[in-house]
Length: 118
Image (cartoon, rainbow, N blue to C red; front, side, top):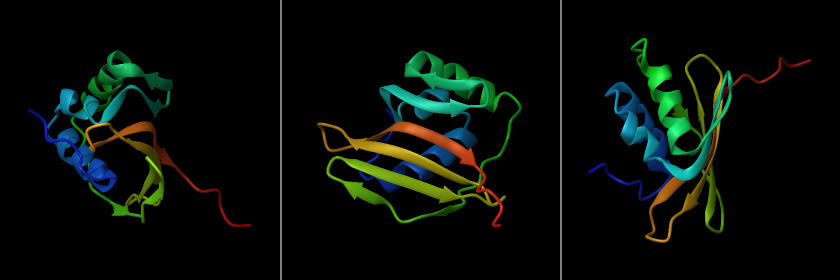
Protein backbone atom coordinates (compact mmCIF):
# COMPACT_ATOMS: atom_id res chain seq x y z
CA UNK A 1 0.00 0.00 0.00
CA UNK A 2 1.26 3.47 -0.91
CA UNK A 3 1.65 5.90 2.00
CA UNK A 4 -0.97 8.68 1.83
CA UNK A 5 -0.08 12.34 2.25
CA UNK A 6 -1.15 13.56 5.68
CA UNK A 7 -0.13 17.11 4.75
CA UNK A 8 -0.08 18.91 1.40
CA UNK A 9 3.65 19.36 1.97
CA UNK A 10 4.09 15.56 1.70
CA UNK A 11 2.89 15.53 -1.91
CA UNK A 12 5.97 17.07 -3.55
CA UNK A 13 8.35 14.89 -1.56
CA UNK A 14 6.31 11.77 -2.38
CA UNK A 15 6.23 12.77 -6.06
CA UNK A 16 10.03 12.93 -6.28
CA UNK A 17 10.51 9.64 -4.42
CA UNK A 18 7.88 7.77 -6.45
CA UNK A 19 9.07 9.19 -9.78
CA UNK A 20 12.65 8.17 -9.01
CA UNK A 21 11.37 4.70 -8.03
CA UNK A 22 9.42 4.55 -11.36
CA UNK A 23 6.24 3.95 -9.29
CA UNK A 24 3.54 5.02 -11.75
CA UNK A 25 0.67 3.79 -9.57
CA UNK A 26 2.14 5.60 -6.58
CA UNK A 27 2.23 8.81 -8.62
CA UNK A 28 -1.39 8.38 -9.73
CA UNK A 29 -2.35 7.91 -6.05
CA UNK A 30 -1.15 11.46 -5.31
CA UNK A 31 -4.05 12.86 -7.37
CA UNK A 32 -7.80 12.90 -6.98
CA UNK A 33 -9.56 10.50 -9.39
CA UNK A 34 -10.31 13.40 -11.76
CA UNK A 35 -7.05 15.25 -11.06
CA UNK A 36 -5.36 17.25 -13.81
CA UNK A 37 -1.64 17.22 -14.66
CA UNK A 38 -0.33 19.68 -17.27
CA UNK A 39 1.86 18.11 -19.97
CA UNK A 40 3.45 19.65 -23.08
CA UNK A 41 0.80 17.86 -25.15
CA UNK A 42 -2.06 19.23 -23.05
CA UNK A 43 -3.70 18.35 -19.76
CA UNK A 44 -3.90 14.74 -18.57
CA UNK A 45 -7.18 14.34 -16.69
CA UNK A 46 -8.23 11.36 -14.59
CA UNK A 47 -6.37 8.25 -13.51
CA UNK A 48 -6.01 6.67 -16.97
CA UNK A 49 -4.56 9.79 -18.58
CA UNK A 50 -2.38 10.47 -15.54
CA UNK A 51 -1.03 6.92 -15.72
CA UNK A 52 -0.23 7.31 -19.43
CA UNK A 53 1.43 10.71 -18.84
CA UNK A 54 3.60 9.34 -16.02
CA UNK A 55 4.58 6.26 -18.03
CA UNK A 56 5.71 8.54 -20.85
CA UNK A 57 7.45 10.95 -18.47
CA UNK A 58 9.43 8.12 -16.85
CA UNK A 59 10.22 6.22 -20.06
CA UNK A 60 13.65 7.81 -20.52
CA UNK A 61 14.64 7.24 -16.88
CA UNK A 62 15.01 10.84 -15.70
CA UNK A 63 16.17 11.59 -12.18
CA UNK A 64 14.10 14.04 -10.16
CA UNK A 65 15.45 16.36 -7.46
CA UNK A 66 13.31 17.89 -4.73
CA UNK A 67 13.96 21.58 -5.39
CA UNK A 68 13.07 24.24 -2.82
CA UNK A 69 9.48 23.98 -1.50
CA UNK A 70 7.76 27.31 -1.05
CA UNK A 71 5.39 28.05 1.86
CA UNK A 72 2.04 26.33 1.44
CA UNK A 73 -1.05 28.56 1.27
CA UNK A 74 -4.29 27.28 2.80
CA UNK A 75 -7.91 28.19 2.14
CA UNK A 76 -10.18 25.84 4.05
CA UNK A 77 -9.94 22.39 2.48
CA UNK A 78 -7.64 23.62 -0.33
CA UNK A 79 -3.91 24.22 -0.34
CA UNK A 80 -1.58 25.74 -2.92
CA UNK A 81 1.83 24.08 -3.02
CA UNK A 82 4.79 25.29 -5.05
CA UNK A 83 8.44 24.39 -5.53
CA UNK A 84 11.31 26.33 -7.07
CA UNK A 85 13.28 23.83 -9.14
CA UNK A 86 17.04 23.80 -9.61
CA UNK A 87 16.74 25.21 -13.16
CA UNK A 88 14.84 28.28 -11.90
CA UNK A 89 11.41 27.12 -13.01
CA UNK A 90 8.61 26.65 -10.49
CA UNK A 91 5.72 24.29 -9.95
CA UNK A 92 2.22 25.14 -8.77
CA UNK A 93 -0.30 22.62 -7.45
CA UNK A 94 -3.71 22.76 -5.79
CA UNK A 95 -4.36 20.05 -3.21
CA UNK A 96 -7.61 19.18 -1.45
CA UNK A 97 -8.12 17.59 1.95
CA UNK A 98 -9.89 14.27 1.49
CA UNK A 99 -12.74 13.05 3.73
CA UNK A 100 -10.26 10.78 5.59
CA UNK A 101 -7.97 13.76 6.36
CA UNK A 102 -5.31 12.92 3.77
CA UNK A 103 -4.38 15.25 0.89
CA UNK A 104 -4.35 14.78 -2.89
CA UNK A 105 -3.58 17.10 -5.74
CA UNK A 106 -6.48 18.36 -7.85
CA UNK A 107 -4.42 20.46 -10.30
CA UNK A 108 -0.72 20.25 -11.10
CA UNK A 109 1.29 22.63 -13.26
CA UNK A 110 4.64 20.86 -12.95
CA UNK A 111 6.85 23.53 -14.50
CA UNK A 112 6.68 27.03 -15.75
CA UNK A 113 9.29 29.71 -16.18
CA UNK A 114 8.71 33.23 -14.94
CA UNK A 115 8.94 35.89 -17.66
CA UNK A 116 12.15 37.89 -17.64
CA UNK A 117 12.14 41.07 -15.57
CA UNK A 118 11.72 44.20 -17.66
